[in-house]
Image (cartoon, rainbow, N blue to C red; front, side):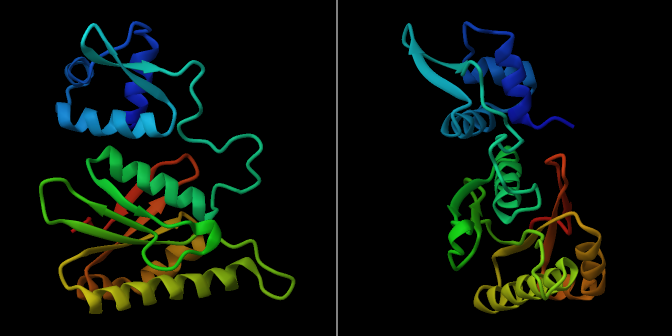
Amino acid sequence: MATVGERVVRLLRLHPEGMTDGELARALGKRRPHINRVCLGLAKKGLLERRVVGGILRNFLVDPPPSLFEPSPSDEHPWTWEGHVQERVARFLEERGWEIQRKADTAKKEPGQDLVARFPGTPRLLWVTVKGYPQGTSRTSPATQARHWFKQAIFDILDWRGRDQAVALAVALPEKEVYRKLADRVRYLQPMLRFSFLWVREDGGVEVDGGLG
């Protein structure tokens, strides 16, 4: 299923004269504040421009727009790389109305929550730990290394739940068989620690396992 961002881009392709947030909201059957947040996010990514024309703010598609979903041809990282997983989860949350308050620099291994999101107008706060899928080393297979990364993610959840009993927690992972099996083994922890799994597929889709608080 296409995300709201995809649908906005497709609609703007048909309207080179641009469209207001209200026009997009009516055409897509969405609330205007939701469309406003989506358009602001797309503008930050360089996908569209927001210009005042005749005193009215309109959205114009950048021509040609950069891809919404795929890394550039020069991107040397696979889709399972932590940075790509983080970006896809951030986009998924924004499309559902969350505001991203923090996005850690995964390439530099910045400590702390990899993503922090807040749902506007509510006290709902979400902390996400993100892991990619390793390529392995000369001494360690990818599957073995993945088990270590998974354990680190679960420790993050344990640590964060101890710090804050109210915040929503999630582990974001690429959809790989090793991770799925490990998640099944710790399923009993989910109701106790109150956390979710966010599974990122190769096509860019995200599946929520456990709700988001």
